[in-house]
Amino acid sequence: MEPLVIGNSQKPRCFRGINLNNLPVSYNWSKKAWMTQNIFYHWIKNLDTKFRRQNRKVLMLLDNASSHIKNDVNVNN
Image 1 (cartoon, rainbow, N blue to C red):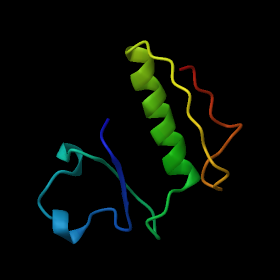
Image 2: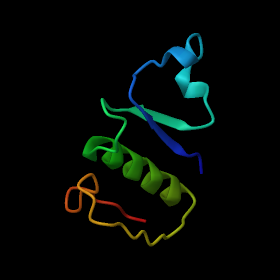
Image 3: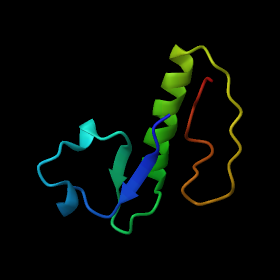
Image 4: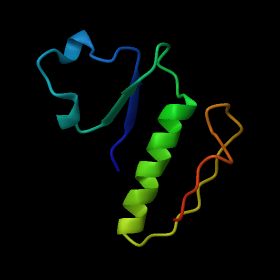
């Protein structure tokens, strides 16, 4: 699984000339480089899709961080 990296810039200067989609990580950004509900939602949906393709069932334990939305995410695996 590739790590999720959250930066505070949509196009960081250090990656000038590099396509962010070609990095060996999943890169997202927010103004304060924090996990947001939107980033978490897209990450968990992509993870669920990946596990569904692999026919894997996974138990994920989450704390009560405000970015961890509970009722809005409908996952199958």
